[in-house]
Length: 315
Image (cartoon, rainbow, N blue to C red; front, side, top):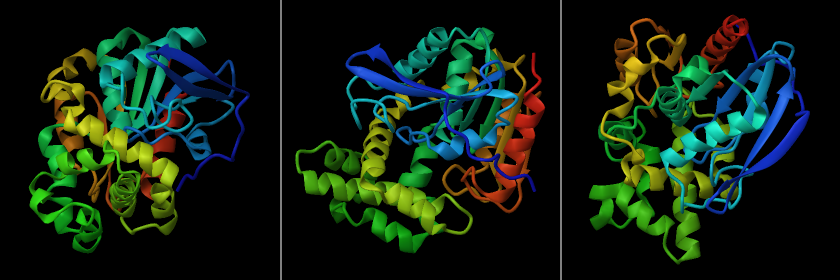
């Protein structure tokens, strides 16, 4: 099994003013003359970490990480105004111009896979290839599975903690009820809801619940951005047309694509990866038979690094 490359530090960090009061954080590491790859984090609202640099050979890649609007180190933190999918796609394109990159590889997991696909559909001429993990199509049924009924049947104990902040009479529409709390004026209720929302995802991301992952997701700074921004996007149906990712898949037909998904992914079930593969018949689909959702599951990590090794020589 392949494992992560050794830790590295960025050779450059900065912020880009993308307008509307938002500044997005970005960093460059690896080889300044290497294959440019953009890591697109999940959530929305998840942010990047130092571990994300380590999926790429630092001698072969110019590794570009950025925090989407409101997430991670981007400013203002957990901000919802002027924060839509169109804004994020435009921010990526502004970052590409800022870095003077003509074409790059996109590497995205979960919501990062969604945003990678949407950017590639908007700017296919600037995308060399796609490495996608834990496919999330952002359809109503995909959001309902995780936040209304579906995953709840497999984690009934953790589900009780997830629904605890919500009054019983509001539980028939949990995303709406959470949105009211996460955007309300009661700071204590807002933080309680954020921790419960984010912890639910942390507990269910691995095949076997990982305490370190749960602790990271429960961190108040991370949880507030993750919960507020995710809920904001999901209450607005991700600001995209129904089934947009699949219906516009033909725009990606000429782009090399590898899809990697855990067989037992409870956050984004594997049927979403299968549907994307059907829409992109030339794509490679790798189903990891003993894995959940996280990029740091051993099988998924191995498959991702195999893909980055293959894609490093794309022209």
